Image 1 (cartoon, rainbow, N blue to C red):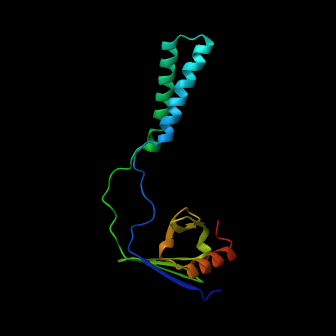
Image 2: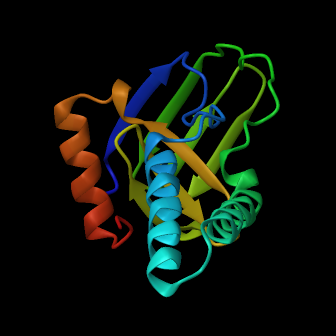
Image 3: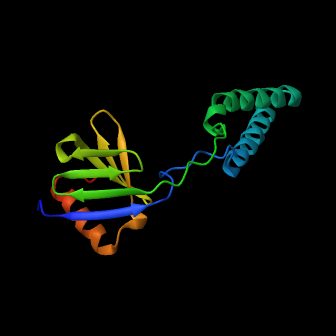
Length: 156
């Protein structure tokens, strides 16, 4: 099936968005449940209430410090420019053309392809990736690409 050829164009920024830095609601709910459990358990065990509250707050602080980077926002950067990109997928490999550069990968250089809701993520052995946005693919192209990748054992 080396005669396959799929062309996709997009001027959208690369797939993926940085975290917004907001702590999810479930984290606050779990924290409240932990404090309630600690206080109730301490009362049942005969520990004075002030000691139980201090222990619960210390426990929450330790957990918060351990996870502070997880919810920390990425440094604000200007939005990436909208650059016209063109992907060409053929039986020999994938080519990405941008305003000032052309990159290409032959199929033996690619070890796996992740199918995410927004893109096909082509992975190389050295962990570098190239994303092919799904938004630009027709239903027929999606089917053709998925079949091709499955036949090569790349689709995970």
